[in-house]
Length: 256
Image (tube, rainbow, N blue to C red):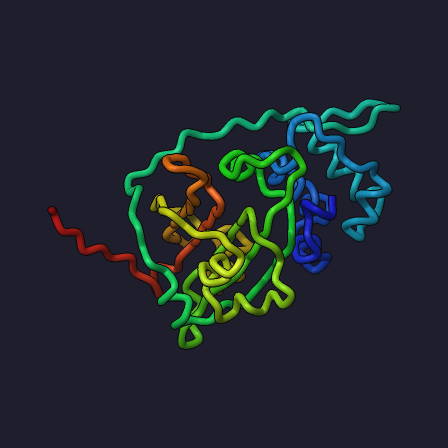
């Protein structure tokens, strides 16, 4: 479970929140089940272990697990433990704008990133499929907020295969990820992007200093590396949520 829930995520559970602890834990586990991080058939820790991981009481852990069972996300059997029974299935990807190549290093050099979380971890199922990872395989995970002139304009979540954790993760505060990737031997051959709109959930709203539910511009970027003369492999998955009050995405297209 430590490979799924970092200290940053675990620390989001708060006794000061008006939401009961058991429901906070239930929501956290549910989100990881629905996005495929906790895949079908995964055995969840017993209540005692779950309580220890999240620093809650066993009663709190039990209520969270019971609610997961009521929602038909897990099955609890005496002597066999609790197993995930929800089967993740990817949603169709609708990409109104794809295949756009954009140089992003200049933005990175002209802004500062605050690192909220990092580590070598197991990504959600959809991203595992994109990166063609085996079950249990881990990649570099970064969670950052980028700001310029004191204004937080972007919330960055990335999963990258084929690179190691740097000795000092603070390198990503000022150094573009692409520069570090090249140093690690990962050369990006092309990029696909998808633009859409989403509303800010509680954690993103807090990170960007906006009201929960605020509209955000969502950009999903998949970066590929050549693996042969014609073959390519996705090596990096990046989702950026932009505050439209501080960020605009413009294009100037020319017909050949």
